[in-house]
Length: 262
Image (cartoon, rainbow, N blue to C red):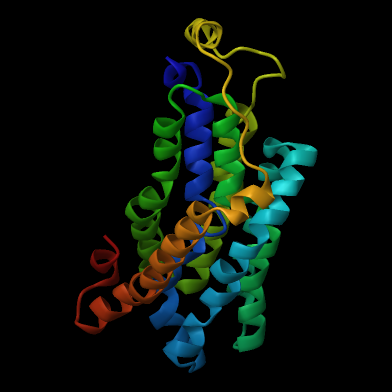
C-alpha cells in the first residue's frame, strides 16, 4: 500500500503542517493575549491585530512558495522555511513594549516561514501518491487539529510556569528542533521516474493514463476554484473570531490557562 510505503514522508509532512507558519502562530495566539497585554498595557484588539500580519500575509505567500517549490524542490523550501519561522517566532520574546515591532515580528513569521505553508507539504504528497492520494492528504492536513490538541496545551503550560517570553522561546524551538529533523531525514521524494511500489506499477499499466491537471487560466475560469476559495475564506473568518479569543474568554471566567488550552 502507498500509505505504508511512504509512511516516513507522511509523518514528516504532518509534523511540518503542525509547525507551519499559518498553523502554529494561529493556534497559540490566544495563550499570549492576557499576559502580553497586561505586561505592556495594550488592548486585546491591538494585540490580536497581529493575526493579520501572520496568517493574513501568509495567505498571499502561497503562490510564491509554489514557484520556489517548482524551481528548487519542496524539501529545500521546507527546510529554509522552518529555520526562518523559528527565527521569527523568537522575535516577540525580545519585545519591550513596541507594538509596531510586535506586528512586524508576526509579519516575519509569514515571510520568513513562508516555505512551511501547507502547499509545500501537499505538493509533495500529490507528487508521490496516486491511488491513496486523498487519504494521504487527509492524514497530513490533520496536523492542523493536532497542533491545537498537542502544541497549545504545551505552550500554555510553559507560559503559566515560566512566563510569556519563555513561551515564545519554546514556540520558536518547535520548527527547528522538532520538525526540522523529521523533514531532513524523512521528507524526501522519489527520483524522477521512480515507481512507488509494485501495486502502483500494476495500476499504472492496467489503467489509462490520467488526464493532466488544469492550467491556471482554466482553473480561474471554472466555478469550482471560486467555490473552494469562498468556502476556505468563510472558514478562516469564523476561526479567526473564535480560536484566538477562546482561551482569554475562559481565563476571564476563572479557568486556569492550562485547562482552558486543552
